[in-house]
Image (tube, rainbow, N blue to C red; front, top):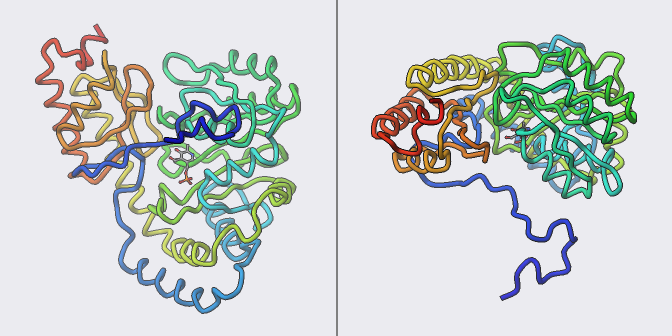
Length: 378
Ligand SMILES: Cc1ncc(COP(=O)(O)O)c(C=O)c1O
């Protein structure tokens, strides 16, 4: 049987595995940081109306520049981000993964490099690989904060073309203070200069504020966002960025013509009409996220401070074994490969109860079980 490696694929893809969070059919799925609440019925109706309208024009290509959508996204950012953003500052694509891909196609590529501080969102490295950009894994402290001195040194030595800062970070959950972002921006400009991409996929869940105001006077800074999390629309595939208008012009050099379908644009516009309701769900999820932190700690787990819609917990002597045992109890969480740690997305109160019961049982039945967190803490 022919395998991938029998094909003349690019050398850097040989022996690699694709991104693949398990999509298992279990009662409680808390593994991909989705929003557990389905879209409210009035929004579903509004999407149907908007899409019906769009369908009448599907014989034509969509608005290539998605101007109406970018205008509404700019209004949302201005209202919630503490910084005035205009249509020409915003670009949208099919999920923030595509935004990141377009950024790496524009500013990375063969002969260029990108750095991220790991553990962090694995797709930054995978998209770098896919665009032929050399990936550099930068350091973090034991507590998963960015080790500023080590990060500055890594930037000075490797002189990357693109620097990724994920805030709040996935899978650890912690936000990055603005002073750290500013210091890394300065280090990146001194070394190259290079583009600094702040991935704010989870910012709506943060206790703190967006880093959007840092865009002022910094043309090499980009903030990327998504409607997959706070807007509860992971299935829509809509990500966007805010940056200097020159960045928006630059990514248009690599975007496919008409990349954002008329149906996508219509659906996203409908969702933006319901921002207030959707942000109401975000408040509920923040409360549940904080409850998960408190209750996991009460159970004896270590928990990383979370500004996101998920929580990193541990520490397990064998985290994969703990993952499997939680799955045996009908709850799917995520093993991101961070030794000793697992990640759980905040679900509905009922789903979170089921998760906490599973962890309680796991720990209660642990004895000298290698999955017990106490063993490693001792
Ligand atoms: C940090 C981070 N950035 C970006 C994404 C991708 O989001 P999207 O669904 O917009 O492609 C994710 C998804 O989990 C993420 O965790």
